[in-house]
Image 1 (cartoon, one colour):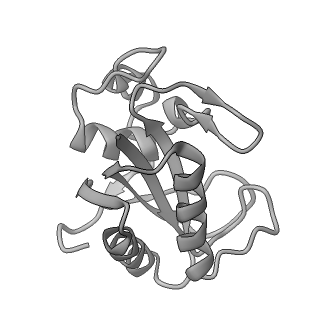
Image 2 (cartoon, rainbow, N blue to C red; image 1 turned 180 degrees about the horizontal axis):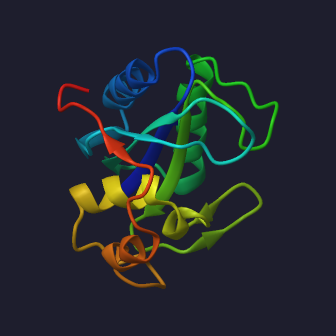
Length: 160
């Protein structure tokens, strides 16, 4: 199954956190990392905190959505993720953005991710790796990006 994962970090060397998370996904037996977007610095959403480093990765997986969520949360936990404040600072955040063409709404998981079409730090890197992607039940990702713009995003070096 083709899936897209949003990656974010704003603590403890954020770019290194994202690189390490990508390595952990590569090492997982049921996940194949297809590609990753460039990294972007973005202004944090939520309470005052440091800027984030964000990216989007395309994966292929044999895992169903909730076992994939479990695997992603295990990677977050291995990176010291602590959930104390809603939208607070974090060492690593891995969001399941899209799971094929599926539309899901369970107690634990909503796909497509409910905020993805309003967040340029998701849409810009997503459009970098999948420029013609259509969000299930919605429009082309690039049309949402045109609506929200690139304000506050800074593309980081290619050597992320």
